[in-house]
Image (cartoon, rainbow, N blue to C red; front, side, top):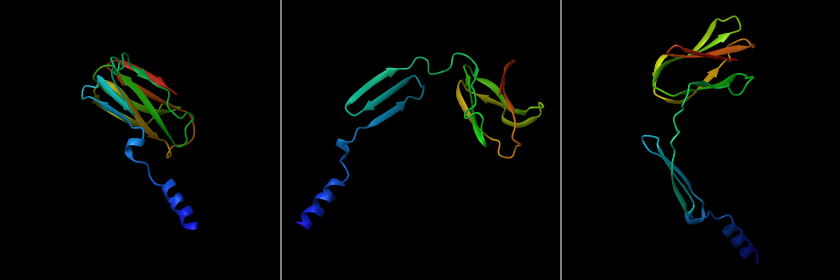
Amino acid sequence: MKYQEMRALKEVVKARTPENVAMHVSLISDDLSRIMKSTGGEVSDKYEANILPTEFALHQNYPNPFNPATKISFDLPQDSKVNLIVYDLLGREVKRLVNNEFKVAGKYTYDFNGSSLASGIYFYRFETKGLQIQNV
């Protein structure tokens, strides 16, 4: 009886075979215009027309307030040279996350580690082609 109980337990914890596991696959083509999704037996081919942003945007950092790190995101609807700069409350530059770099159109997120800075309020500014957007 004890041998049978142990054998039953072994069968219960045995890993499932792949045909019993739901699968999720995402493929993005080189031009980022098609996304193919597969979940289990269901397959779809969905055209994504608006993958690239349609306007410049500087998003609220997350988390906010932060201690010691945060993420800063921006949208770039066209290829451009970009600056992303962090300033203290007195307007002094404390970190340049992107320094006049050429970026292709898309969505970008940068990690900002402020662990070496004093606690306080910081601003960040996104600059490109005569456009400046600032956030707290």
